[in-house]
Image 1 (cartoon, helix red, strand yellow):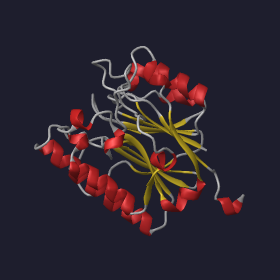
Image 2: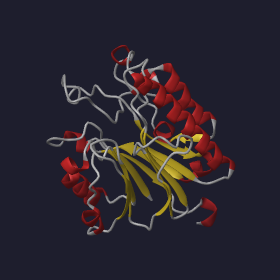
Image 3: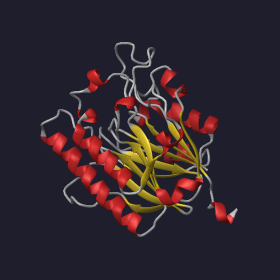
Length: 260
């Protein structure tokens, strides 16, 4: 089973790229972030065999889950703040898996309420993941985390040192997810530097591979034995007028090893 995640930075602008990628890579599930609009092309995805569920808002944010298998929506909001109207969270069940699609707040500039919101959002997510872990729900969290976990995950710590994505508070909270029983799927299989999911549009960052790894899959430890790989597909970032992110793909066995 292939589960992918891709921040498309406006679905309207890149719908044809997403449809083409789905036809070529044939994932079972695709998590999309930063839809940037309330209109969603359900028919375009249905015509190529995908169910779709989404949470959207005008001009900003937005997440969608596409699946070749039926989708059961568990929640469209992250518990802990009833006044939070941002479209950043979609929790679903697909087959035997709880799949959570997130677009975690950016948090810039540091020292403002936006940074405080980012940290509070991460604390809320940690509480939700702790509940699922306690209930032994096989869970996969994928999306744009807007966190550079370690120095190895960026081309230059000096360049990013003042950015909210690189601050010690969100990085420590990300490590808290791991300590709570979740596995960073990409780092489980890949330990070398130079692997990124995001490149800024300017200063030739893409052509010189000056990127950062901020799109992640966290997998509950109960699913670790079912993981068979996790890779970054850089192809879409090289297209004309691409998203500044590129897809990350998790491969996982469809059934537990003992049932094979």
